[in-house]
Every structure is written in C-alpha cells, then in structure tokens.
Length: 79
Image 1 (cartoon, helix red, strand yellow):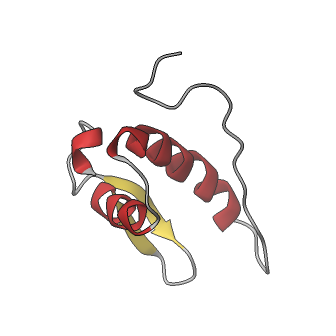
Image 2 (cartoon, rainbow, N blue to C red):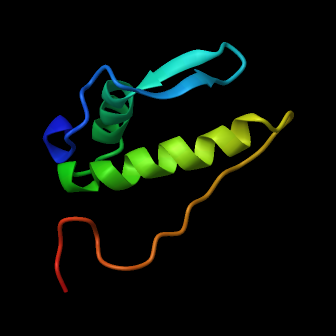
C-alpha cells in the first residue's frame, strides 16, 4: 500500500484525532486501507480525504457521520 505514495510511513497526517488525541501517520492510513480492501493507487486519494475531511469532523462534538463523494477516474487510471 505504501508503494502508492511518495510520503514516508512516519509522516504525520493528523496531529490529534478523536477524544484520545491520537497521531495519524501515513502508515496508519495504509494499514486501514489494506483492511478495507483498497489498492495502492488509491492511497493519494485516501490521504487527501483523511487530511482534509477528518480535521473538520473531529471539531464536532457528539455523534456524527462522514461521507466523501469522489467523481472521475480513479487515481492512476486513464479513461
């Protein structure tokens, strides 16, 4: 999965996530991506979603749900 990005595994994507204020690294995103069945070419998109979307939602208190809509060809694919 890490072959799908030029980022280093220990690069921090989010400094404080959730109530326990956990650090999210590129490696942690990759681990979750593998468990979700993602492909390496989807890693840049996953990092962009993680970096942009979760920061906004983590500021909200109480129950919440998040969704992301992606339109267009998958990264690394043509046509």
